[in-house]
Amino acid sequence: MSGSRQRTLGSGVQHVLDYLKRTQDENPTFFYAIQSDTDHSVGNIFWADATSKLNYNYFGDTVFFDTVYRTNRYRVPFAAFTGVNHHGQPVLFGCALLLNESESSFIWLFQTWLHAMSGQHPVSITTDPDRLIQVAVAQVLPETRHRYSKQGIFRETQEKMAHIYQSHPTFEIEFKKCISETETIDEFESSWQSLLKRYYVMDNEWLQSMYNARQQWVPVYMRNTFFGEFSVTDGSRDINSFFEGYVNASTTIQMLIKQYEKAVASWHEKELKADYDTANTMPVLKTPSPMEKQAANLYTRKIFMKFQEELVETLANPATKIEDLGTITIYRVAKFGEEHKAHTVSFNSFEMKASCSCQMFEYTGIICRHILAVFRAKNVLTLPSQYVWKRWTRNSKSGAVLDERASDLPNNSRESLTVRYNNLRQEAIKYVEEGAKSIHIYNVAMDALQEAAKKVAAAKNKSAGDTEGVALTNGDSQVLHVVDENRPTTFQSADEKEKKIRELTAELESTNQRCDVYRANLLAVLRDMEEQKLKLSVKVQNARLSLKE
Image 1 (spheres, rainbow, N blue to C red):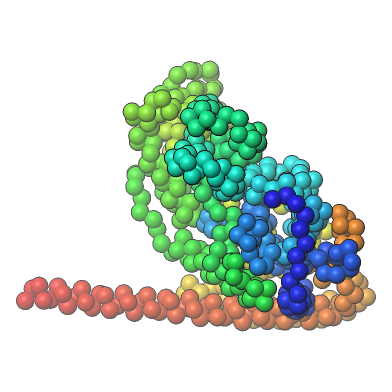
Image 2 (cartoon, rainbow, N blue to C red):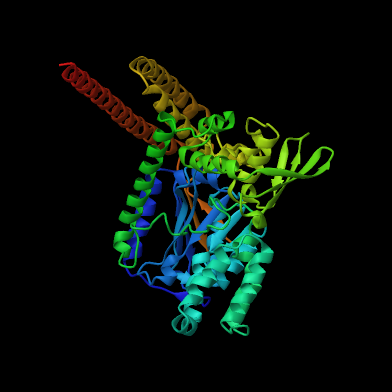
């Protein structure tokens, strides 16, 4: 699909616009933008809340652009920018309504989204295979590695090759196996040529075009770039997974906002649960290795399970030294009985660095079994710091922004209202989590909060007098209206400073109320756990007495 298309959604669009304006009035950090159409009617719409922008600071290294509405015939042209958080869960970076699908519209959308994300380019982006999107990504994100969704390729191949799929049912199985199960470029090339010859499709134009673009979708060609997946040959992540089950072909424009809010709330709850499980339960260790215990304390539960799987596999993948070059040693690592699938690991003992031909670490951010096997052979007992990516750890959100990105943020961005709000919010959440751990800590935290509230009120009154007449230049309510579709221009509202302070005060009070609710919920859970433990201990005691009788 690559042609320009115009959609109309009637009065339902006004319902969305009213929601966006109301939300921004309530929370100045909420961002939305409108692309003016040629006849000055409402065109494409983009929005991102404060949480989306904060999450992008932490997890914006890889992005998925979901346009599933185009292939699944949705009633609403709803698109989303998503990513992967430290638990491997989908996380939202912004949403859009694409009423006008043209090359310039997609360029506008990517420019606007990038502007909302403080201009930070991702390492990689995954989209459906589409000419219009390809042009937009190439123009707006020229340094970002662009990957086509494997599911999108499989879907279009099934459409283009329908006659082959019908006459040769095994073609689909072998085609997917050729793409997903080959481990080297040579293996893929050989498998591809065999597939074409076996089914007599050597001259098929669609397959030839897909082969020409293989470096943008075949996994073995993408290994040197991070995509947030847990396996080099996996690629099973659906790029529309954030809204799966909430927005579908039957969703109307009137239902959209409600379903959007449900999805956001649901994934937020899932992240909180994963945070709680990681912080309060200890995984079962499978080896006596100090490295496993170290990883259990560093990684989130989901990521640790993947690391543990790799570590355990070292027992079946011995490392054999094949060349010694001084500080650099070359090893051959292969599973017992599968020597033909051996991988090569280069280990620098001076710098404690290793690189593997499988490139799993580069692709997933998780160290592979082959390097771990070499570490085992060299008696490296703990993970070197360069092999622990902060974005996968339980402390991935510590600090104002992701450490690796903080130095790249412009000063005015770091001082903006949005960033200040996000930093305070994140610190408040950590404060609540610590404050709820015991009654004593709770009382200390409450006293500190009350004292802090007095200081904030005093500073607010002083600030109101000192900054009278000073306009905010970064962090104001922002709406981007585009007349020339390729050049967004920012028009900032003329809200007075007092109104901003009132809005922030209201937001702070609302946050405090939510903190009280979270604290009460946590305490209730802890009380329930204590009651359950007491009941179980009584039952155990009774059972023991019964046995003695």
